[in-house]
Length: 480
Image 1 (cartoon, rainbow, N blue to C red):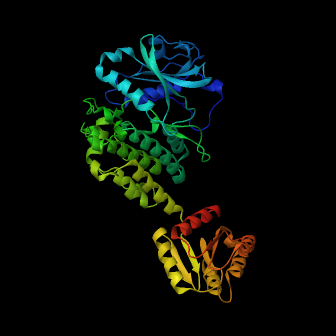
Image 2 (image 1 turned 90 degrees about the vertical axis):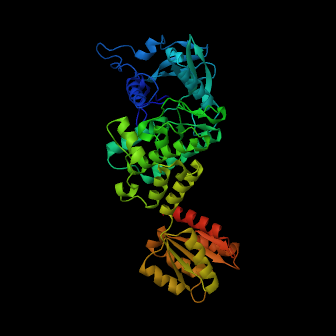
Image 3 (image 1 turned 45 degrees about the vertical axis):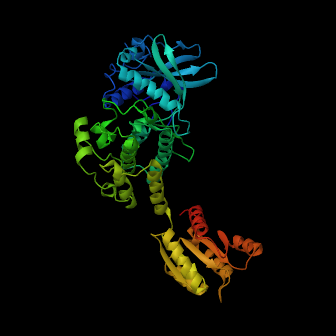
């Protein structure tokens, strides 16, 4: 069941257009239908409120549970309208009259509590979510019962899910932007890391459970992992369940076989699901597709996914190794932690945005060679050319502009100051980062170089990591 978000894809609509809750209920029912062992499907979605012969804005599930818009829960939360429904119950938007904020409340069908496993599932969800405090994990505020109906109160995230965002990208044609995909994955991984650090496994990671607080138009969008409804607290030592849980599209092979009860391997199923999500975000399609859940699980068990680059020619090849390792059939062959998967994804992304041509101009042969070795290690995909003086540097730049030029301040004939001036006189150098190195210069030289258009100034000897960091920063600031 998809809990707490508006169904809009990217641009939030005016409040009057978001009032009926019909579309989220329909999509929530669709999400619930892909989960195994969760319960019966929700009733059909009603016609839009206000349409000829249409029902009131409360959902069928709400009315079935005796809930109405305006109902006051625990003397604190006033129900506003439904957000979604599924086999386990309904999620509503509510207003916290004490703290003056909007929240989401998840109500569970009380008849499900006749089954001990589902009672444990609900309590486990509340405990699992409440014990994790992280910006990229949905916050749980409270837990209780309303007239015999169990519920818990969560923060309300207004915006699309990652599933909605992906659907919008498909409507526009083509796969998502790689940079946008990596930014989303970075936050999702951080959230799942926090869940694992709390000795918890999510067990149902999928795009519809990833909530976005707004649009991906800048670096301020937040992604929150939600719906730990089938999570297991490892510290409880519960040893798993006979109930098959999760979504077939993102289910690890061992989970499909019901063989994921070993605590030391439990987090690897989340890594597999993250691999599926990353694959879909970077290629525009999931690693496997089939008309039924059984067919999907069979493919996860038996088939190797095609390399991502075979589906998207402009994708850097480094992503093949990262994603295919996350999707290994044997959990021991996958990334050992979400942190390592995240670092690997970011490393490939960094390399994709690193400079592809670097020129070093320095008259010290030993230093020049040491610098080449250091740069080759940190920028393995870059062409690194070496010259001994400013004249040679200008000649090389005339042949083909460079993304980054490292210049020694003191060189015979054409020194670093003159070379910087001559390079900046060329319009093609507007996207070139110029970094000047010196063993004897000071603040006066830097002020002069800065006025001429130099981007950085380093005093020898310099740490290779400092050079790499300055190269990346200045390269990007120049639009690289």
